Length: 98
Image (cartoon, rainbow, N blue to C red; front, side, top):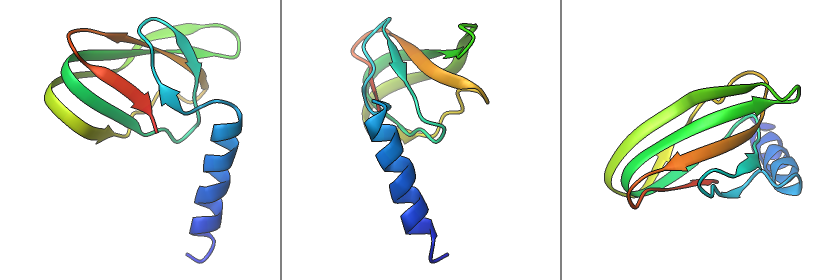
């Protein structure tokens, strides 16, 4: 257990350096880390597609319908080999990798 904060901090630092945090803009690809948290706000749907290093796209690896969400945290699984994700957002829904 003593190593957990060190490991967690290291994973966060690596993810930050490769640009794996931040707002998911509708239809744009963003790098992701292996242990993402997704911050959801607003009302609408959030659908996430994933792409691996070979360029293979898997659609709909995560889907959520939210209603009046305010800083809702989800722990999605984008796939074993996902390196990038793309969001499709409807309504006022927003998504951010934190």
